[in-house]
Image (cartoon, rainbow over all chains, first blue to last red; front, side, top):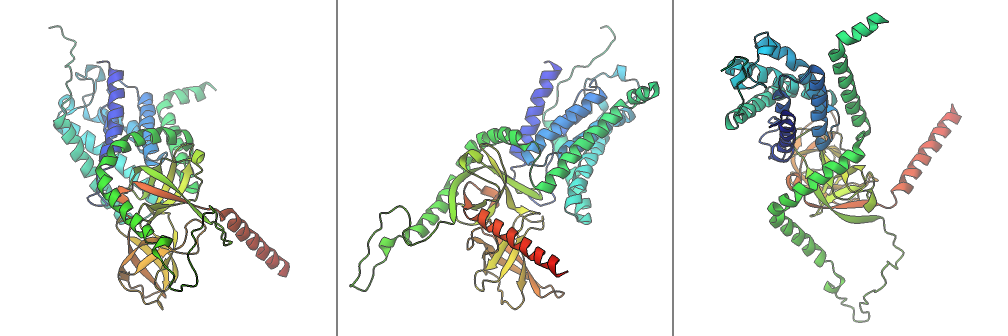
Length: 178
Length: 292
């Protein structure tokens, strides 16, 4: 399937899942907020340029914002992780980007440990920034810290569940002739 | 000049990152200030469309509870019918009035319109719900929203053509005038952003003898909410030694989790009240100025 089409479908699915499934689930506790929609940004192909990553991040965040009535809140957090994604990918993956064997970040492409670090770093960044912005409005510093830790943990759990339940079939790309 | 272009080219990604952040943050902070969204109009129509599609399916899961609530409401109204009452004095008899307006010099102050909740949240610190009536159906800002069983749930803060957004009582910026049913003492209901099962009632003086289980109604100090509708019941009395006022934890009687059918209540005299309030304020200010 075409990469663009695939990602558009994925975008609709992630926003739909977040808005109509995860946000409708009765809260177990006020600290436990399942957030997974930003996995869309984490799964974008390596080939997307840094500028387009920012634009896509902004659009993703903003469309979710309009469902949540918080224009700008999630958009800001998504732009932040879209900005930092290339740096983290560069640290975690061997330098020469032309030799990536897979088209997008996944446990298979990066190995479980680097992928885990990648997911952890970006989730923490996303939730930290998101909740910080929320906290500026309604302040309680202890709440903020506990919430960041709890939501990050929940998100990582969800992301790895998604990773195991829906293994993405990806072609192994190589430039050597068979 | 060349250096400027080189600089921009070199840091292009960073600059666009900063620009997008500034855009997002300005949207966020402007929104919070005025309680309504920038560009919300069109976006509201689109999210409203998807939300009402989802709601069509979701409705079936709440039919039973909703029926029960409406049945109870009907029951309470049925008992108010004039036919239920008889005059014991045989010298007079009841005449059913067929005139559609009230002839006893009463003027309508509150008008209810039915609406349907299409999306709803309770998980965040600023909870809103969206209803399927908008400006075209006569919904305006500041109208009160009550649940199908008569308990208060929120107030309209944004209106588009066919949908409107209401701020739920579970919103950290929500303040509602409230009173104790027994003593008629006035206070205000707020939410601390923590548990969706508890609201906070402040400003009830300690001279009032409050007991757990006392009913809290909407108060008279409001232009938006009609007085006397139920908000909830006192569930815990927190001792605050430093003031002469109670801090009461109130269990809301509305179940915010499954809002379905609601009524939007318009205060038909709101404009007049607000104008009078402003005029008085101005007069007092002018008097003070003259004194100085």
